[in-house]
Length: 88
Image 1: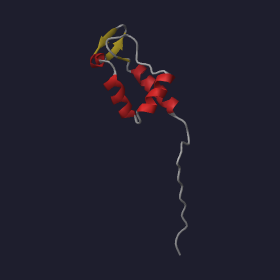
Image 2 (image 1 turned 90 degrees about the vertical axis):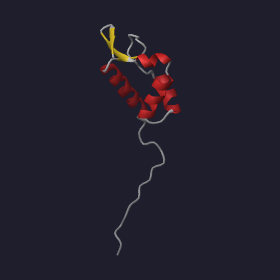
Image 3 (image 1 turned 30 degrees about the vertical axis):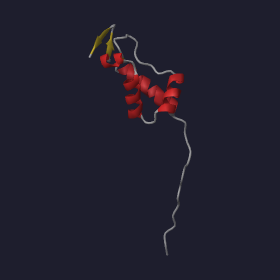
C-alpha cells in the first residue's frame, strides 16, 4: 500500500509584498546613509519609481545592478552621506 500524498501548486501571488521590499531598501539606504554623486540626499525610492523598477527588473541583486548601473555616471562617486560631508 502506497502512502497518501498531497501536492500543492501555486501559479499566482499569495501576498503582495513589493511595498515591503521598497520600504526595506529605503531603510537600508537610510541606515547606511547611501547617496550618489556627492548629493546630500539619501537615496529614497518612491512608490511610483519602485513600481516602474519592479516591472523592469526582477530580483534584488538585479535591481541594484540595474539601478546603479543605469544611473547617471556620477554613480561612480557613490558615497555615504555623513552630516553634510561624504566619505567613501
